[in-house]
Length: 110
Image (cartoon, rainbow, N blue to C red; front, top):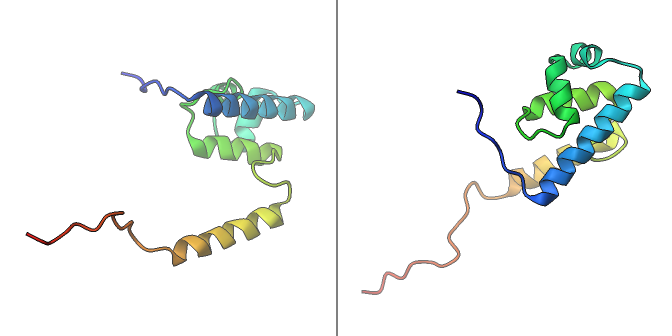
């Protein structure tokens, strides 16, 4: 029994295809085979191929490792800025309540 197919909404599908095209272009620009990129990123050439095809079933960690190995920018072009933004967002999340309160408070009037 294999993995369950993941249906992507159009926006997410386009994003996966764009990410795959960016990965393929960066890999070819470096003159790396899929196997060489896989060795740098700690995954198989089949995983690299799936990422390049925009497959939604690839583990997110593998996508991040492949992009990092190639230097493909995910959010911002500068690693220092990415680190700063990650810390700032973690601080915002830390200050948020632990759980979401219901929008309407149930009435206790009987």
